[in-house]
Length: 56
Image (cartoon, rainbow, N blue to C red; front, side, top):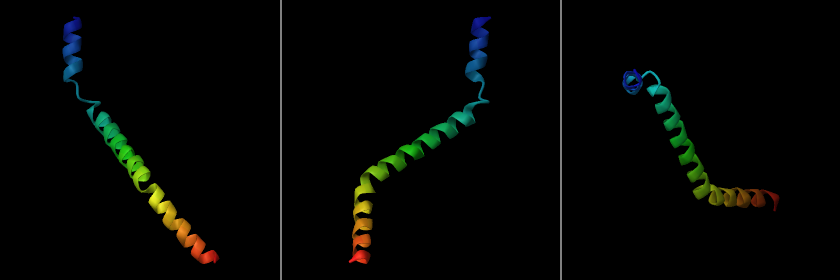
């Protein structure tokens, strides 16, 4: 009985799409975080330069 339940659980793919979407969202979030860490200081310094150009 338990083995039949485990086999049915293993072959059931109704929740697969939600897991795939969750993994996709997590991958996009990691990419955004890495991009912000990589380019964040460069973009911030450009904005600071532009802001100081307007104040002078």
